[in-house]
Image (cartoon, rainbow, N blue to C red):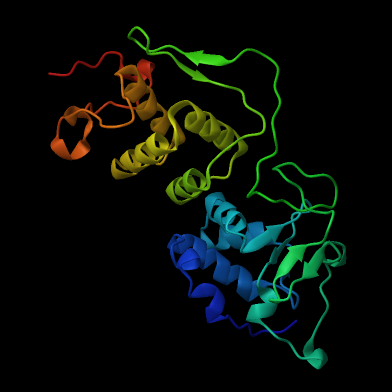
Length: 264
């Protein structure tokens, strides 16, 4: 296996790559450096521990399709053949032959899952590939869940819809906001958008980010408070605007955390 690796500016000099956190970019470069001659790695977890990178960094690389994971724990760098060309006399075929058979090389030299092998969700059948950019329809038995507000006519209903529907704007904003591709987060995000609307969810994500919280539960709390107080989606009262200094500093916190606190 070669000791030297190259990187193509056509891949890394893009807004999509440069907007990722520095830790995520760092992980990508270390994976690129240590991949075999066909771009495969069996020790991604070890590299993450060596570099101090977190699970969210890997999830973001997967979500933005810079790497493709397999259920065996192997990953492959999608744009490997764009980054590197190795002469035949120096080339060592990958030992991940099973995973290599599951991929095709596209016209632009990037890897893509072969026909019939890609999954449309978070769970995998044997020897298939994750596609975390899509959500598997979830069907559950039971009644709609209902959250009751503190005022009359302030009930917000979250329907158990199938398949999950999330607009691209909300999905991209949430990925940039938290980097999470967790299925439970996606299900809750779909419910929030269906109950409150795309624009309100986007605005709530922006408010949470301004306040330094990157938890979806905080976004949900903001939306519930807006709905409880009669938020109509067109114009919030002045006291809800963070810049005005007239907003509830405990907005978004669960009721059990608000107990025992008295605003003076």
